[in-house]
Image (cartoon, rainbow, N blue to C red; front, side, top):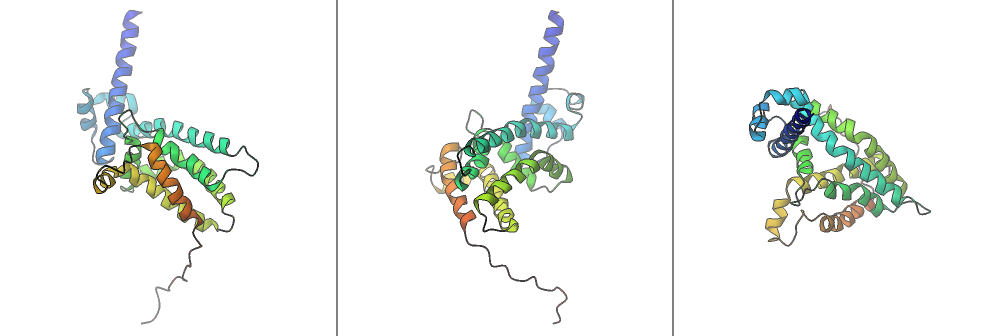
Length: 228
């Protein structure tokens, strides 16, 4: 019995070490910039354990994504439901808060850093089919729900208008997580993105103004076959 318990503790400890190392290294270097050996060496375990526990590097990245996305999406939906209780539904600011606040709070560690937000931002630049699938599997459903909520708040906008602005919303969240050092340097520490509440208080009204902006005046697409 004691041997079995000790073995379980050892297995759980090794899994967690691998997970923690992978999360940090992926956030620093991206998926393509990290090898199984890098992760194993950082975790202080045999590299064969990465395959044994997670099925390889792809399986490990999927585990990192899923473990973070589940509570993130749950908190987003909880807040949206809470804000939807009053008659008339949530305001635009409340829809944005329900989407943004969990991104800044749920994934922040005890040091005020968000490895997962940074990870998502860095991996999005790799344009990998694997990463696109992970993003789709974990976020497409919740994104559709929030786009629908935004449309109810802004009925004068087209679906295309909402999607463009939702795309820019995602970019703001990603960059806030990936490059917080830049604004800290420019502001000499007065602006600190690692403070989730302070960051949300600045980001939500900024994005609300963007969503409320007049519809874009789109010019007709130019024909590539136009005669010169």
